[in-house]
Every structure is written in C-alpha cells, then in structure tokens.
Image 1: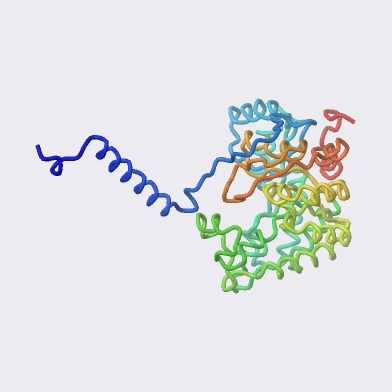
Image 2 (image 1 turned 45 degrees about the vertical axis):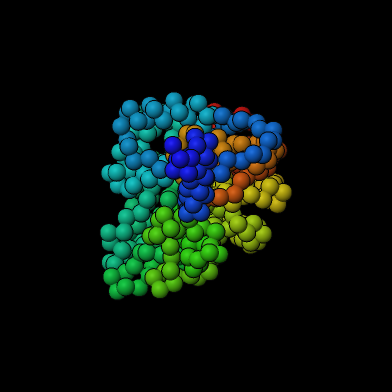
Length: 369
C-alpha cells in the first residue's frame, strides 16, 4: 500500500486535534456577552452568612398569595434566615386591604405588616386627593400601617387629557398630609436607575438588563428625564416636612452616595430602603461603609423580590469584610462586591431599629434592645 495514499494513525490524530482546536477557537470568537460566565480564580477568605446577625425587618416586600399554606411557608423561611417581620407593600385598599390584613396578620400578628395602596379609579374626578386621603384613613383603621406608592407614579400615570401626573402634583397633597397626620410612612418608588434614562449603547453599564428587558428603558420621547423626576421629588419632600417618606431603592442614588447625603442633609423627612441596590453600594466598600455609619438613622433594610436564598448576599456584604463577593443577578452587576463590615450598632439600626421608629404598631418587644 502506497504510504502517500493513506494517513498514519498519528497523523490522523493530529489532524482531528487541529480541527477540534480550530472549532473551539472559532466558537470562542462568537461567544456573546450573555453567554460569557467566567469562573473566578481568586482565592480569598470567605465567611458564609446564612442568617442575619440580628433579627431583620424587611421594609420592602410584595406578596399577593394570601392562602394559609403560603403564609405558613413564609414563616418557616423567615425563621431560617432570622427575618422577623415582612412588610407587605401590596396590601391594596378597601376590601382587598381587609383581606390582606386578615390573611397575613390573623395568625401571625407580630410577623407581618401591611401597607395600603392608592386607587386611581377616580383620578380624573374633582377632589380626587381628598377622597383618596379619606380612603387611606379608613384603610389605616382597618389595619394598614403605611402607604406604598408604585413606580407608575410620576412616569406612566396620566390624566385623561394626556398630561403626566407629576411627583409634586398638588392633587396629591391631601394624601401626603393625611399620612403626616396619621404618622404613617409613605414608601414611594420614584423613577428608575439613572442608566435606564440614558442611551442604550456600549457606555451604558445596565446594557445587559436593557437588552433582556427593553421595556425597562425610559427614552426621552416617552418619559420625563431622571433629573426632572428628582426635582419634582425634592419639591414634594419640601412641601410636606411633617410627612415621612421612605424613598425606595436608595432613592436611585446608590451610585452617587454624596448626592444622597446632600438629600438627607436638606430633607430631614427623607429616608431610604436598600431594596435591589446591593450591587450599587456593595462595589464601593470604603465610601459606602462611611456613608452607612454617618447616616445610620436614615437607612432601612429592604429586599424587594422575595427569595430567601438571595438575602444571604446582603448579609455577606453588610456583615463581613470579605473581598470579591459574587452577586446573584448578573444583569444588575457584572462586577463583584465587597464586605462593608458594619458595626453592630449600625446593623441593628438598618436591620430593625429604624423601621420600628418609623412604622407604627409593631411589637418592639420581639427585638433585642
């Protein structure tokens, strides 16, 4: 047999290996950003935090399932991570509010808090604010311990004329004044991350999230600018100094803590929760640690999307001094986080003491002094 007409086994193996290498290389060149999931080679000390160091109040949670089985399941999960109280911000109004309070507080009166929501069915009728304030007053009599205002307010909500409902709309003044009179907090979601208002290009650090969820973008032809919403928000705070406002998601200034500090200094009635912004303050450990210590009386723990396993990432960042902590949702952060190692007195305030101070009717006896 002519050796030129056949390949030796060793030569064939080399050809196949070369083809495999070339194929793998070609595949690596077409790998998308979404497919890229690098495994870190970093080896550093790691301190797992399956439970919060101190009992926890989650000021920012949503639960629509009112079945006894679901509520019982919640209690078991809460106990496993030292979550003492959940504030359900999706309480509704009227009969729905009564049902939520009965379902969540009936058997576990100390473990749940329910906030009311506004109805906008009569938004276009005269004296909407006065009627909404009266409904809220009744909701509080029926067990609500605060008011939650959702993200459509200021951005998507419009009058039948097409005019946008602004954050500082005077029609809502009676509602905020009622909250001040009843001494209940308003947990209010204003705007979205500032990057959602920016062009979706290679410079936008939330590009992946906007690619996966295009409807989260806030283009200028459809929405007010981020700064417009911030100006309206600040005007609302100034108009109602006797009303306590908890600004959801660190007021969307988690990426600019100096600005948030100025907000605190200017408006004593403004507080924030840390729901869904761990990726922001967790990437700036030195500045964020100083910020939490300085403004320890103004920050409340919150999670937003309820998933017990994800709380532990918050504990890890806030309680330890670990480096290079992985985050659970890549579209929020393709970077790693770092432990703030907050002092115990700060943790206690963020975890439960500030909430006890702002939300009426909670049983403080179930928490350490």
